[in-house]
Length: 273
Image (tube, rainbow, N blue to C red):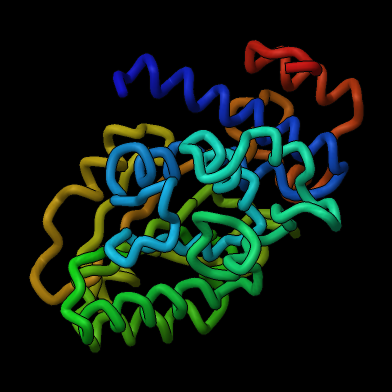
């Protein structure tokens, strides 16, 4: 896709995310909007997947460790043809296969159940270790939230990844600086995240998390032999909607009709789009 096409695609995905969340009056708009370009760089530029055969053994694996951001994953999977786009509008309904956190038993294209913060990193380590044991060529990618990096399990997973020399594993962090109760620094300062992952034995990079080209280039750059890769993606919570951007309160609250109309208008859509 050209840069112009990708920009249009990002806007479309954001509209789909907002429509999903407005219709169900639940979910997490802020962190879903912040990781759009990260998932686009993975699914449109990097990963080997087959929408017609979601269980293909040779596919790359993806773990959305920040599982509350699943509207973005669902929007991307639908756009790629894993399931009909119309399914998106039933998000979080009891009869829907699209629940409030990813469920690999229900949703085509989902490789891991996530939602308990911190666990996704460990799941990804297990997947990458399995690939090493099988001498399989697929790669494993996981998107972490910055708030969940306050969980000790993240660092146990990082230590394991380095110990087992998992150079087929990449962690990307959606670093928007905010979480449910405020800023990362207010809740539990993360310090220099890149330096920490380097100390844990990762090959590290830092990019603009809304620049698809920059993220894709970091993903494509060869990792040092025997080292897992870490990419810190600097993002804006609520990206694309003026009144949501960089506001912690939009971590997990629904839009009213007026807010939804304004948000869709800013993204060049309508409430019926």
